[in-house]
Length: 364
Image (cartoon, rainbow, N blue to C red; front, side):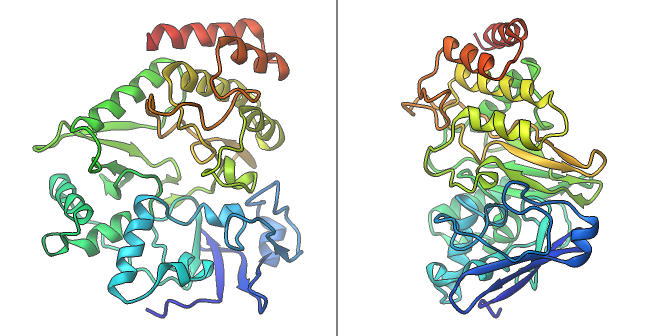
């Protein structure tokens, strides 16, 4: 493993999107390939329009990267695994450049983009015992490496985002994300997440396919089918935070920004009502962990444009005082605020009232 990387080729399903290079002044430059300019699409339509221009990010959040590339990097559980893998090699994570970090991502990485050269090996598809994986995860949390298969857990989860431990595995040739309890989670956390996804689905929200996988040790493991994979191909995905070139760690975003982005980049304006449903569900159900990385957009090659991704990472967060995303500036929004934002974006008052009433009926 070389670790230090100064130039990367950005790929999308074996096609060259462009190139990332660290300059002498430590800025990171990105340029689309000529063929991608002619035949591809903008991977970040608000920041990186298709052109032969050399782009340099001025964001203070992503260590020289544009948000779309930062989306590829693991956070939470995935970053924990990367840090511990590097410790074993006497390498400091904090001293690694952004391009070196991108080169550590395996084919399990989120979204459609991949990076070459890669310094991560891919596991051959196999069958996994979820209880054994959960036991390995627990041992890693407790720094008990001797009794865990760390290399396998890193290969399966080192590219993941979010706080909860998880693995990316194939089941019947389909790509799934399986979540495990963290050290502070209740034993039935999988069952709880399964239940809230059922509520969202009953509220007529587009939720990605989900399942409760059986366990001998817990009350089941929550699994979500990956919507950034289809027929063994990668789909390009970009988060709301990345589109706006801001971090999800600081609550800068309002739901009006979500609606404005949909108006600007989505090919189907029905996504405005889909987003409205999700906002109402989060407010009514008290999912206050509604930050900019929990909303994403997929590029649809058939439609030649972006559409809102399925709803994901839904939970109840009573311990949070306010929502991560405000509603017209209100961190503790009421039904009045939900109707006010509908009016601001010329959404049907009758339809929005029906959405609110449907969700209230399901949740309550």
